[in-house]
Image (cartoon, rainbow, N blue to C red; front, side, top):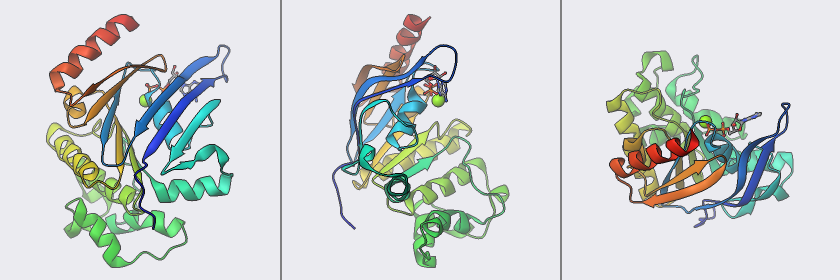
Length: 247
Ligand code: ADP
Ligand code: MG
């Protein structure tokens, strides 16, 4: 496997939704770099384009113009089949609602992406992924037998099994209590610190954002500044002023 310093790069990415009566701006020429070894939080008022940005970074959103590179590969140059393979191999996605399959055990959920890629996952590999999120002893449990925080950790293990260049998380702590949320944030922080991947997280929570190296703010699909080594207080103050402008 090639090791790369590239996580995700967006260059002047634009997307307008034209399905309704009026065009709606999703992203307006956004350029951002998410190198491996870094943890970035994306914040902004509701409708500011955060989810669109994550989907564009994952190749899940057809963009109007600009370039998305994942692990150094330009998505626009790929056919459907190649894009699917790249998504499976280079991108791990974590959702607010976990999206685990309820009838499968934790180990089977974690193994699923490799199975979908036509690989036969080794038991040791699956257990190592569960171990890395502190759940080696829950391999045979089904999601319904796990707490919300544990389910999200299984989802993170599933996102890691293909050794992706980037982990994209859309409000991963949104459905968790404070303590479980902090555990998940500590885990995402550690994944970035490993140095092999970029972690990008959308959040509404200034405390969650303070785990990141950098917070990027969006309004109306546009970049509206960033904070390095953010504190929760700084993030909350910036959000208050952005939301005041948005009203
Ligand atoms: P956020 O995640 O910051 O709340 P989104 O990225 O979901 O924002 O949405 C950005 C804008 O694009 C919003 O105005 C939203 O209504 C619009 N939008 C998102 N997805 C679609 C879609 N599939 N069709 C039409 N408009 C959409
Ligand atoms: Mg969203």
